[in-house]
Length: 247
Image 1 (cartoon, helix red, strand yellow):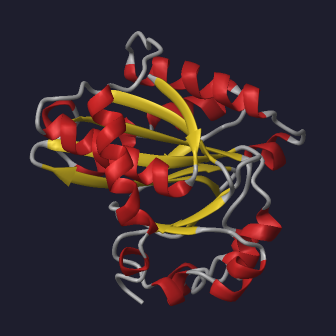
Image 2 (cartoon, rainbow, N blue to C red):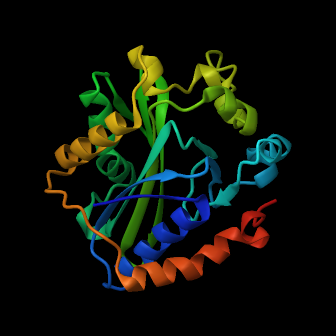
């Protein structure tokens, strides 16, 4: 287990690095718990940038935008209200069924929310919900027998900022009950009725993943090879060509 923080370009480069090196047998299975500093918007590999993000608002608030190698939707990673996890492991270590693999690998965020006293549930395909609203979104990328799953843990995300900089997918708003982002997204602090601190959230995640994965989690560090490759890959994520891969 590695606890980390950095900008969005570094965080996405490190996730890809660990996936690639795991596929080559050069890195072990790893759990990362990390914070985006500064707050950052990430978009899925298949998403259109202009359809997913209010670029004018993001530029006004000086919020960087990074494209992931994983699928899924756009995310506002609040440096003071959200912790991201990533798990990098072998495909033969997870359920073969796609939905079950999401359920298994996101089990830590579900257990973490429950440890904080909330009735969290997994909702297929890839959401963690509490009181019918989403507090965690998860996405995957697979390469040469290895899998990366990363996802959010919104313990105190600024939902006003989130709704300002992200464009909600139309298909998510077609139901009668979901007219705005506020109707389908929440934070654990809102659900619990009190402010959850970052240290509380981090402890809950460590304990939650320990319980969900039924493994002993030992604090680790990156190897020189991991740090070197992540440094090289970071420039890919910084480039406007990658960010605007799908304008």
